[in-house]
Amino acid sequence: MSTVEQQYFALLRAALWDMPVSLDGEIDWEAVMQLAGFHSNNVLIADVASRMPDGNKPLPAILTKMQSAMRNNLLHQMQLRQILLQAVKLLREHGIEPVVLKGFGLALLYPNPSLRQIGDIDLFVGIADFHEACVLLRSLPGCYNWGEEIDAGRHYNIEFGRIPLEVHRVSAEVENVQLQPLYVAMEQEGLLDHPQRVNYEGFEISIPSKEFAVFFTFFHAWHHYLKSGVGWRQLTDVAMTLHAYYGQLDIDKLHRWLTSMYVMKPWQTFGYLLVDCLGLPQEELPFFDVSCKSRAQRLYRQIMKDGNFKRTNTFKRKKPKSRLWHKVHAFIGIFVDFFHCVGVFPLEAFREWCNEIQVGFGKNFQKK
Image 1 (cartoon, rainbow, N blue to C red):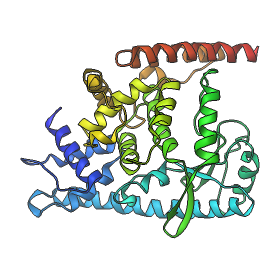
Image 2: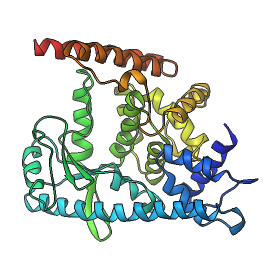
Image 3: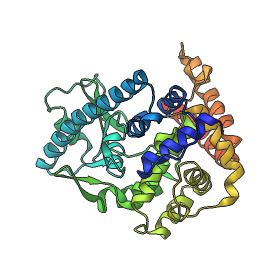
Image 4: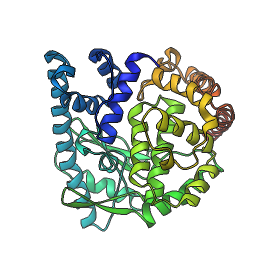
């Protein structure tokens, strides 16, 4: 771990656990903030920097940029909040209870919710109410849709200026024919049957059950590790969820979900980094396994290289120019993802590769 990385994690731990910064020597603020931006938690770092003693604060020019980022994030959250409350109120008036996924539900678990960076609004309504919910939300003032069919995918996108609202029929896309029914049952229990009702600035919203919140936050990060790159913002979400619900989880249920979805080894490996890098107390991480250390070190290097949704690959960025090239491009992309994962998680990479090949052939067969 480089000096800049040590400084970055010391500042990040101070933000997550609301404690003083423990650092010796001068902080390379420009390098630290560049790293924080790459992992989409620069606002958390900026808040810690603004509260440090005068002798340790960044130069005025850098501090001004930090304060500007904090203000912009706060204004963005206020806009998101207004749209969220309008959407929830409208759906409830028509007998639909949406569950807030990710962003706002996770922000409530941070010491200062206004510092968790939120890109969009994710509302889960389920399959039964999906079409009606989309039609209703399109009636909100100031919204726009780019001509997408309502029943075209796992979620429907509505935009309010630069603010996206995603209406979800399912919370995650699980294409494995064996695992998909298991996930649907978990989703039914955690989002439809037993959601939590929490107070959000005087307004009650529904968020996932505690066990599903923990599992889904990790599973979402795992999916992005496989496909597009996972950053420390997503992993701090996992840490904050575990910390908030420590002592309140049905551990047997969580164990059953992780093992049935074949992600126990990734859970333990990512979990090692939550403890080692983010300072999550070891007792708050179920199924901690110290033997994952060497695998976790390999994973750490990938995370630092990939960033939050920023995993780059020249081949994967190229746009297919023909139908044949589109098929070739898709299948080579499967191998690109496989070789990215296999050095850390060989069994999981092979399982994912087999499923991607099976799904790819299945889609081609259906088209024919």
